[in-house]
Image (cartoon, chains in turn orange, red):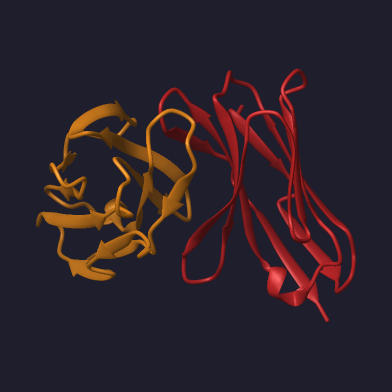
Amino acid sequence: KAGVTQTPRYLIKTRGQQVTLSCSPISGHRSVSWYQQTPGQGLQFLFEYFSETQRNKGNFPGRFSGRQFSNSRSEMNVSTLELGDSALYLCASGLMTGGYEQYFGPGTRLTVT
Amino acid sequence: KNEVEQSPQNLTAQEGEFITINCSYSVGISALHWLQQHPGGGIVSLFMLSSGKKKHGRLIATINIQEKHSSLHITASHPRDSAVYICAVGINTDKLIFGTGTRLQVFP
């Protein structure tokens, strides 16, 4: 069974631009969570989606948004990029929500210049 | 104070040594996860625990819910075990709160 895939793997953007990252969960998984990893803050929770509904949101500004489609694929969008948004963005999928094992994708490394 | 504390932050070992990484948390949790991250970023889920003990190969994870403490043990460590080990706790649904990680280096 294919693992979690994330596209693109690497991205360079300029301050003020917007970016969309994509995550395809493992087939049959309905839960997708997004995380940001930076050297200064470590890993932080962004959002969680289950059956196209956002179930939980971390402490990030409104520039960070996401959605989940009926096939469980998820996208996250960051508008008006700032230098501090440079990070590794990871998504993880799970069979169900609420204490199930999560499987992580390889991440998208975003660099904002 | 962080909700999830890991110790030690850095750990070096000789091949074959028994290794223990500790994780303490201060919040109510639905589950505790141990994750492994190699250089380059990829994260692998090693264990998910809500009670007791789990073993997979040379890795053992234990959790004490009353004491809010978990340990990850690596028996007969090997250089390929070198990685960052991250403890994360699940709070409601699938929101994870992460520790800062333990960087392990195992030398031949």
